[in-house]
Every structure is written in C-alpha cells, then in structure tokens.
Length: 347
Image 1 (cartoon, helix red, strand yellow):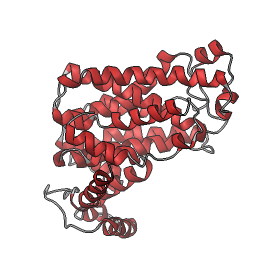
Image 2: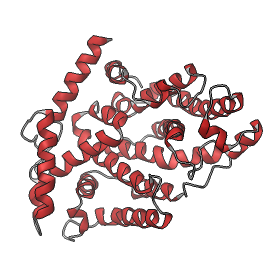
Image 3: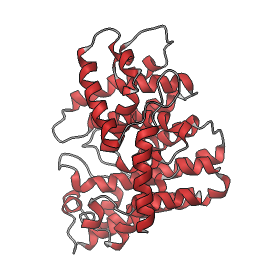
Image 4: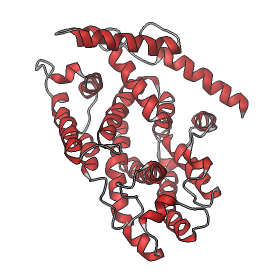
C-alpha cells in the first residue's frame, strides 16, 4: 500500500509538469517542477492583471488559463483533482476546464456571509457566460479576459458539448441555501442536476454517446451529490438548511438543530443520516452494476465513485456520526485507492 502511495505521488508530480497543453497548438508546454508551475501561474496572473487589450491572449501562449483551472480544482475540489489526473492525456485539459467552471459556480453561492441577492447576481453572470462561450471566435467578449471562461470557450470550440448540461450546473445552485428538501426524491433530483450533469459533460468530452453509460452517470452523480452534501453539514452555518429531507426528519422525530449538533449518543440523528447515506449507497451500487457495459476510458471518468464509496464506508464505521474525525478530514489513502482502481480499470 505504501509503495502504491509513493507511485501515486510521483505520478502527481510528473503530471503536474506535463499535462497542460498549449492553448493554440495543442502541444505540450515547457516542463517545469510542481512548485514552478504554481509560482509561474501566480506571476503570470499578476502580469495578466496589469495588461490591457491583448493581455489575455498573451498569457494563454504560456498556458496560463489551463494552469489556473488546474490550481483552482486542486484547491477547492481535491478529490476530483486526483481523479482528473488519472484521465487519458487528451481529456485532461477539457476536464479541468469543466471542473474549474463547476468550482467557480459553486463558490458563487457558498459561504455564510453571502447575501441572496449577491448570489443571484453571480449566478446570472455565469449563466450568461455560457452563451458567450458558444459564440463564434470572431466575436470578442469578456470570456477572453476570464481564465476559466477562456478555457471553457476553448473546450466548447474543440468538443461538442451540450449547453443544457452547463446551464444545469448553474440553475441547480439557484436553490436558496435556507430551503430544505421535502423528500429523498427531491434531494436526488438536485444531486442529478448539480453532479450528474458534470459527469455527462465529461462523457461528451470523451465522445461517448451511450444510453446505458448515461444511466450509470446519472446514478453515480446522485450518489456523489448526496455524499458531498452530507459531508458539508458539519461545515454549514445555521442559516443553511441541512440536506436531510423533511420527510426523514419527521419520520424519526429529529430537528435540523440536532442534525447540526450531531452528538454521538443521538440515535435519532444516526437513523436519519443512515437513511440518507443508504440512498447514496443504493445509487452507487446501481452505477457499479453497469460496470461491464462501460468502456475502460469511461471507467476512468467514473473514478469519483472511489472517493464516494470510501466516504460512505468511513461514515458507516463511525456509526453515521458526521463530526467523527475520520469523516471530516481528507482521506490519506485515497491516492493509493484511485491509482489501484485505475490500474484495474474499475470504479
């Protein structure tokens, strides 16, 4: 296991040097060290802010936008950052662009101090930006001046992406943070919009058009979405509604306040979290049942299932205590698990 972790670390360092492609020619950019990549991206970000007119295009010659997307995903979505590193080389740049866009949209509404009106204005910006990315290259827009949108525009121009899925990533976040879910079904619908849509976009990047694969992506997105929302409960403020549906709370006679406190001796809270986690586990199993109908390339796109499964297993061993130390930190064994599953072509 330790040997596999060491191999994964070497791969991360190596891929951080080589995976980013030149924005125009599609050739690999000059190889630099891991620290050098991020230092270079930082210096280019500062110089880009000072330039006018053609500054954005000049920065792109050095792959600034692609590096920016990769750094953004690494900082705010570390598990999917590791999964994306294991994708085939020809898919990584587009995958980082899509995940960085999703990170930006999610950050627009996250945080305890964001006013609802400000959140709506930010989402309106990202929603309108999608149309800008689908405009012809001859029409200059602000998309060229924003690194994530610049990479998204490049991805849209080189791949056939469905605009509906991109819009769903934005419209799903229009749901007020203070609005709870009425039922498990409503929770699943939200998870499908906010998480399955991204997986379907990654499938389109890979040129996959298959109904069974889309079905597996739908189930995996629901599982990942529910698990992610469970993980966010200990970090959420009291102004945000917990993801445990009202029908589950009523069934077990538990209030949202008790869910937030999440005491180890509260059996009612344990039953509520168990029921929601079971829904995520059910969708994960359904996605894995379609494993044989999924090509090896798609299996790498579905590697996020490994992180979801690992969290649900840690939650089970902690007796569904959300605040248990094993459930609130990073999984130190995840790189080794991902590397091993990638070698076996399984998810």
